[in-house]
Amino acid sequence: MTARRFVTALALAMLFCPPLKAQDNPLVQRGIPAEATAENAVTARDLAHASARRIAFQRMAEALGSHASPPSDAQLERMVAALIVEDERTSSTRYSGHLTVQFSPGQVAALTGRSFSGSAGAPGGMGLNIPMAAQAHVEATTRFNSMQEWLELRRRLRASNTVASVDIVAISPDAARLRLGLRQNAGEAAGSLTAAGVAVSQDGNRWQIGLSGS
Image 1 (cartoon, helix red, strand yellow):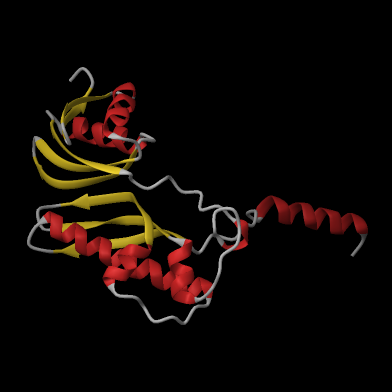
Image 2 (image 1 turned 90 degrees about the horizontal axis):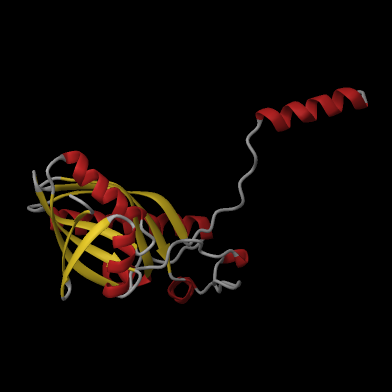
């Protein structure tokens, strides 16, 4: 092959082949399916999240080449540093969605006997690069006039940097009860949400929320 043909082939390969991605951090497992059916929505969610943690652990162990015995559900829950909802669908008896599960480097090291180096404790010095887990939780209720209004409220909550998780406890055609995981204390979080277009009325750890101006 002449030098000119080699350069042409290399250029074509770079044009049509996607760039290689940096190695994923095995302590952060994304796109984990979470599905369960139970007697009510809250139990279905809890069962689905527990199943997702088990799936995430199996994938992480395979990525690390670990042959450690799977931990119990209680141990596994303690190993999870953060759980982020990517998408979810709920009904009165069913929960389905996808989660990002972040494991604690220290807990994983204790189970597998493998130490993790780096500033964030991740393999190869890679940071976990995932939002901080919830520092506090509040119960919130909301009323809405349409499905579009509900979806917009949920979008604003999830888009806010101050909200770590949005768990639907109960929902009806015009109202919902939520459990919000906050990355700030309740007062600071309420201020941040108000700036993001979410009206917040506080009564201790119970909130009434809605779209600003609704």
